[in-house]
Length: 497
Ligand code: TNX
Image (cartoon, rainbow, N blue to C red; front, side, top):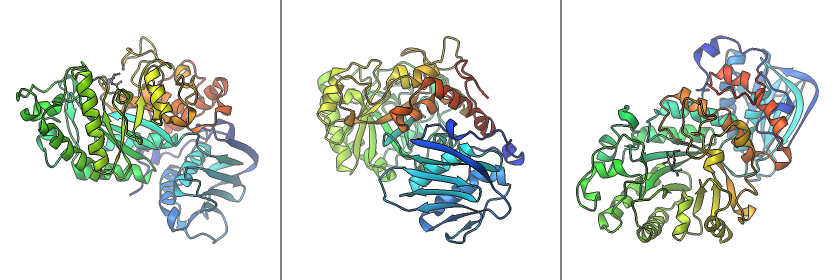
């Protein structure tokens, strides 16, 4: 069912303070346009949510997120009943994205979009405006800059339960992130049960970095996670990293190793030491099985095949391997996303390269982009959510950079990659690697407030880009984070409310 899972019972019991709402000038990500009008709408005893059949799921979600303010869920009624309503209206052209319009006056709220995903985005704006039980009057028209607005969670280095991933999905939704890339397998753990190769999860998933507890998702749990995300208009892109980052698989099945000997499980944090055996047939039977099961579990169009840091695979083997695996993914009806190293092979026309370099000058990726390869931008020195904020940040790493909020916000995805046509840029993703992270509080501390900064780069028109305005808008989010129990880094760059 659709409930506001990020809201703790403690918060539900205690009415949300009248201070949580932002004004129209404080919405994150900044909308295309927003204006305040006179008056406010206050949710009262007679308030209902009106929605037609196709908007009913969003209406239920809205009733759930309003519960801390309303005490009991608002009734959902058919449209056209008039009166004191929050109307969710599917109307106008379906522009194929999450465009919406929000109109609030003293009598009610009208949210209009061409598709339910737009209503859902508008609901997130409405949540930010809600102060106690009332919303200031005004108008918003809005549409995303980029179709791909992503976050990645590494559940391989440390395992996170379905409930923990769902909590993160709820938090992503607040900032109109629509893609969750799940890094499901690495040297330290394999986290999805594969029916045809059961030891991957039962043995390969049994541990984590530092010998911390492992874990894996059953296929039923994974399907539930995909459905939970879909209810929030978030598409999951599952990643099985290869040909490197595969020690958990090699440890689980001796026959996948070139020498036929399984290495021990690994709980350290080195990278680049493992590789699949590129010249063995069983490698590709294995991958056909794994990718086939993954494709069957994935309603979205993309599977991520990793391809980074293959330091133990020769360059020629890497090309052979990545080209062959792209074909396997295509044979199972899916498109490939891979780390940008895939451009050393021959990307299929539909392959998307995820850029993680620490410079804006990478001629090979720019050339691929000019030849039609789509690019998702995750420059490690700007977008990596596992980088420390400053030298004394207790969690995270610093190999790419220290990334304060202003750094995370201070670049333009459209023009960042030198020599890449703007049309090649699909969007932005904030990856969160978890070598040093163990709890939801850890995840949140690294993601907040940088994830909202990246979300704004991905959603908002470049004309709104302005650090001095953004820091105030970000500051206005803090009461909502406190109400939702989100652990965040109190950056000294932000005048927190
Ligand atoms: C590099 S960046 C990795 C990951 C690590 C991360 C830690 C990339 C594609 N691979 O294996 O977890 O650094 O920051």
